[in-house]
Length: 448
Image 1 (cartoon, one colour):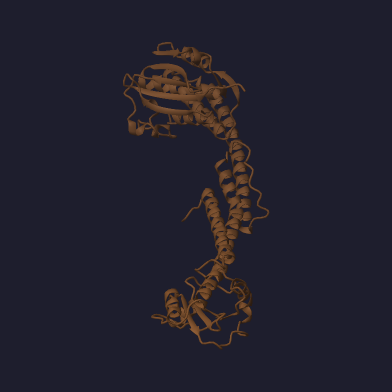
Image 2 (cartoon, rainbow, N blue to C red):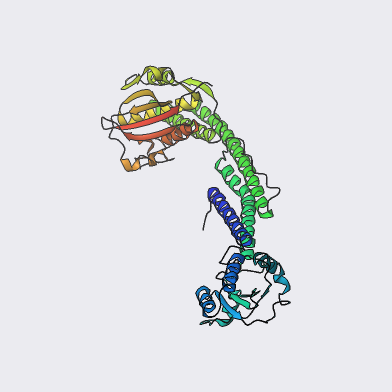
């Protein structure tokens, strides 16, 4: 399907407008230069010069002059004296006769439309129609009659304009008007497309174009999209309410269950049960936090990211190889976001690094208005073809789904959702030591 952009439409409108102007100028040229344009009819000056020359010659010299000036478009001959000159000009050509009479120095002149006497090789009737033949009968001062059959190279109308000029001008104007109408009618659709790209269910719906004067179909499309926006927003609110209610009730049940497992006499069984309940609560918190991020439910506060990282790393230093290196700019960098969500981001990454890579080396630096936090581990690394898929929900490199060998596969998916909700990005690569490197980039808060 051909898609004409706004720039192309404007260019096309300009081109059609240019064609209209050129067509009008061509018509004006043929109309105003009638007396000098040999493409339409011989000029009065030329006929006057020929008549003066013939009046000064006699006999064979006169015939030589006629032979010299004659051509397929300009046939001149002398008729014996006494031939009638007056009373033969048709009404549509009277104005033309006045123009030529003014340039022939008082000589009588009549203009008629004779048949085309030229031999036509193909389509004789069409050739006659296109010939636009005119016969000039000019009375010479010697008493003879000069007859000139003029056949224009360019067919013209009785107004002196090229044949088809009116149709071309009308078609150009119609095309220009059609383009203008199309531009006016399709403008709301372009605005609607821009509004669709700005749709964010976590924010207020974008304003839709005013299409009260547009076609009914366009108004129907815009109204349908407006209703769709309302339904999506309502569905999101209902989902958030449902998830919040489920989270509250499940946490209540988990707390009760946690109290009950404390009475399990076997220490090993009790620790496993407590660990399972903690994992369940953590999974629930991750899912709820990710849902809040997608719905725009995260809070906004200024967070010193280096200090937040230092607290998380300090909590994990007992018996773990974890360290933090931050440059001067990173230690003073402030990020605008949800403190709890940011803690969950780096907690998930640090836990994965320690669980699968046996170490977590954290480096923070500010580059191009953003703070980049790199977490390297010392594990086997992640294959390059799976570095993006591990960011998807419920995806694990270890396929057994055994809780003893890993989580549910939501950790990195939650990380990506929360980071993107803060306007940042997550990239997974290879650490210099051969393990996995996770780069988290967040925009630094810039006071207005």
